[in-house]
Image (cartoon, rainbow over all chains, first blue to last red; front, side):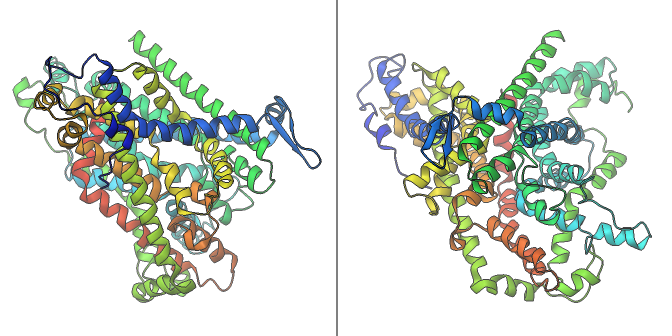
Length: 317
Length: 294
């Protein structure tokens, strides 16, 4: 562990004078300066790695590079082009489709597992909890690689079994099934992570909340539905929003599988893959920046809509 | 399920274990462990038996040690170098980012200062910024100052963890009582010493949580090194294996790489799985705090 003290913080440490009041740092400029010292290392990095690149990308997205004459200001042309670009639109719609099917399935599974663990009725709860969580520790590259082999028509065990019983080779990697195959990989990776978050939230729900219900004769399912699930709404919302963000940014899994299924996954299969291709294959940095910004806008809008919907629901109940 | 009309005192004792529920969960567990089981089984096979034997059971001889030797000797033993690179990149950036998050989160939780809520909202909002939006301009900026294709190019961006600072703030709010800090101050301890000797100690489970999750994020990172590095000697293991895998498919008849890729994958996942198992007491507690408040 690094013991280095950030210089900014070190300088602003108040000298250990005998304090006059009981809370010498409180409500004073000294407290503020100390606090700035503590947050400064993070905020400097935040500015350098988040604010500056973001502004730079915004700046780039407003230009067009030409073979003759260098970069020319283009206004919002790149954005107009992206909105009309079928490759970008297809990618976003594909991710939206992925989102409305995969995320509910994944989170429902996470919630069921978390409720089962929380019920205290399971044998081997630790084994089950860790076993379901373990895929989270596997790099998505390795996950895609393993599932790619499992799906594979050659030595994939599912293909071997299907052939043995005379069903022919299943087309997990065919254009028709590839989105479902990807959804399966992502679900496999993240059910456990979301389960752990929900389980942790459930564990902190005060038992007095549902002991009363149990006295009133409410069954385990009714307690789960009417008391436990509403009580962990913040954790559920967090899971939904992280899933939304993750889905629209999908890159690793399709990129890895595209080596096995080039006819099913093209270079603009997801918006992120498209932005990558635009920069590193097409050399269209300016246009790629606009595409990334629009993707960011989609993510912000959808996340915000999820939050609003959740708040409205909370107010109604 | 039967409703339990037992008095409140009974509900504090453990409920009856359910065999049906346990069996259902164990069946689900098979799904989650199946690919890993396949990985372990396949790492014991040579290329020939990968194709000629059933994928989900051992067969065709035990070639694990031969495969391991192949993994660590192929391409002049570059795999070992990739593993070290990954350990170095992930180690430095996770310790660094957890430490920065601890400092910042502690200040956001325990001090009042102008702009506190605004700064924190901005940091929290930045969680929604997609990594592509950041990674590509960061690459362009790094290439201007000559950082591209150096280890720093993949370490520096991973030092920033907005979610980490959120988690540390929530954790410090809950785990560090004001009275203890006040006592330290009255004793004449400076702000930094108070943080290090009182605050940080109490925040340790949260710190380990952030560290571990940032370790996973760096260890498993693919997009950032894919963009930043093109020197195979600097590759982390994810990029290296992905490259070997694309070669394995491309070689067609001479598929000598499949067993290497599979065994290399197995070796690369062991450290993180071990870290999670060994440190579970810490991160489960740390996550609990993050999940409760919002």
